[in-house]
Length: 295
Image (tube, rainbow, N blue to C red; front, side, top):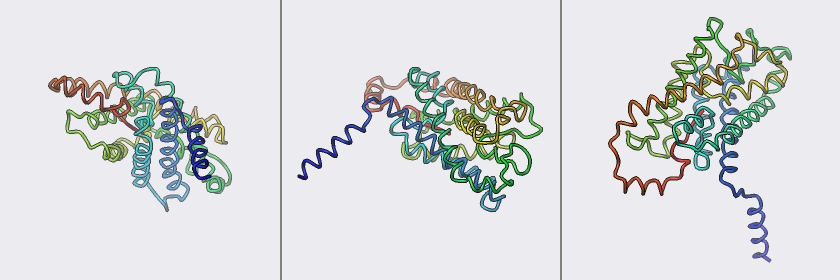
């Protein structure tokens, strides 16, 4: 009897297990981005809905960064833990990931962020309903839309907002390339997500004033779409002088510039490694570990 039960359990696992690596990677990106949005935007929700009693700018910056850290730990071994379309796009541009994977990675990321926003909305539904008398507002002192997506400061111009996103993401990708460059100082694989978290804290504490430095199209666009459907209305796309496209396009541009800066100023100047050692390393390292990242 027991062997038969064991065989049944094994058979069930075999039925559920995905065979294609791309499907596994897509699901991993979905889960990682989902975790990041629930915990990251959750840190914003806790601060806003408590009117500062249970959080503020420090808990938001640290909370979002730690959300990225745990999301990478959860998924890096499967997909690399990109959890950010800008990261995946930069890897394709610089030959670190095959282009045919990009739509699948991005699809998983955008869907994961949308599901994360929906989950957070459900968790804090009563709090949202009681915060402004049942109104879901985009602007004003009782606004709650910025729990889910970023919005510009009143003084910010479109040009300045775009430059802000480009520079923030540029710095993110430049340092991320350095973290995963084994011919630079390098970081032990198990500590890489923590160092990335510290990098995000640094950027958020320095460049977050203008618009919150999203640096991630999925983290911003999918939750914004959810808020449009959940009751805030499609004004979320026109607020801030039609700001919505800037956290989508800006990070993609910044990611390419950041990667280019690192390659031109640092990577191409490394001495050529021993070809025998390089061949051994390429056999031992799966493609997914060439660069595993980010928010």
